[in-house]
Length: 386
Image (cartoon, rainbow, N blue to C red; front, side, top):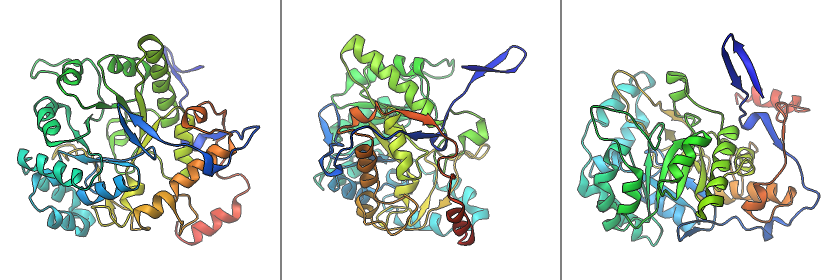
């Protein structure tokens, strides 16, 4: 349904996580018997969770731990891990910087050039731990870096920008051809970010194996405020999932839909899957893990521009270990820990034994889902400064 914004301008309603709820199924399933595994082009994960390619989250140590726990961490090839031989000092400086100086500091730190030698070194450090390795690059460097990444032993190449399309108009530089890129490497290429059906379908036709969904929903991302661009994640995920299904029907190739950003709690994660996601990519929640690179801090992956800063540092604090955040036990009652347990329980309540079945879950528009009957909880959280 479309609504009239003014003469000659109409818009359709889009929905985010806080505006919808899942309807319980007529049959329930034991959470212990639910399969949440996720596969992309031969790489299978025990849990459908990816850690976002953000410097405050993923370093080689975090990537190894995430892999050992059954998930996948994506290392940012445009970040401090590939700009500095020893990034520990840099990460500490970012964590300790006063608020009024952080943007200037980030701009200075990210002017150091990326060293190609460090790309291979970081990938080898991750694979030596015996886990799958995924790396992320901006489109401008994807073509040149792809052979380096593959030769070093990475298992997945993520090409990530604020917004990516299969077609781009520019007279000043050559646009990356995803069709050429996917045919030039043997490892799967995941592209992002995208939020609409038509663009998703065009990107899938280029041979990518996964699509990141989301423009600006992340806690440390400022795209929506600075540019006014974005689509709420429930609608964006549903639209891109529809493209996935149509693409599969006509080609026989299934492209993974990965909802990227905007999930703060286990309930948000469950709604992402019910909206059509095959996996989720998370940043801020994982930034609060003891193993995260940012020491309880999180900032955007986009390189800050001196004229238009595109990311901000937020303090997440440290809530527990990565294992506790994924599998519990939870030390808090806000739904930000034991994400896998929350997902399996939600699936069980809705009668879904697999992610594919969970994608068929009935949803309702319910903006009062988090506030109805929760007066005491809200008062308690306000009193605690939450």
